[in-house]
Image (cartoon, rainbow, N blue to C red; front, side, top):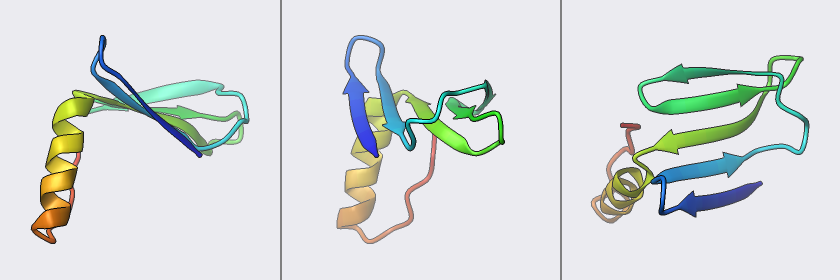
Length: 68
């Protein structure tokens, strides 16, 4: 697993697998790239900065993290 953040486009990327992506779905600012078999291989979270800050705050407050 590889996690990266691109400041210039404000996207948090979570690479789950090295399997090539076949198609993607988008829902509420989260793009999930799927393999041909239908398993997630890459997740892109738009507004990544906001998500990361909310995640840190939630961890400190011991709350559940919610996607934007």
